[in-house]
Image (cartoon, rainbow, N blue to C red):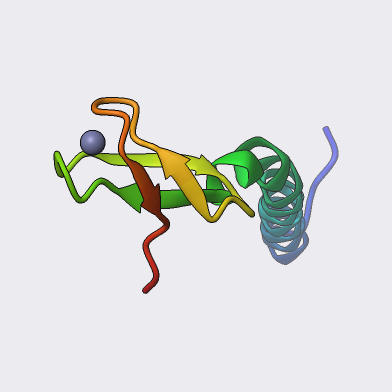
Length: 77
Ligand SMILES: [Zn+2]
């Protein structure tokens, strides 16, 4: 059998854990942007006739309500 120093064992374990977390952080940061970017680029509309909330893609200033057909402008916050 070979002996392993306890401090070396703990250091390797901690470094491996930190490296694992950093890899997951970078991976989900990049993948999350591509997956959720389309949802983030949507604009919210509120229908003044029926009160329905709906979304459309970014850059659209007016959109027709899917429920009643009223043309509405986007919400500004
Ligand atoms: Zn409506």
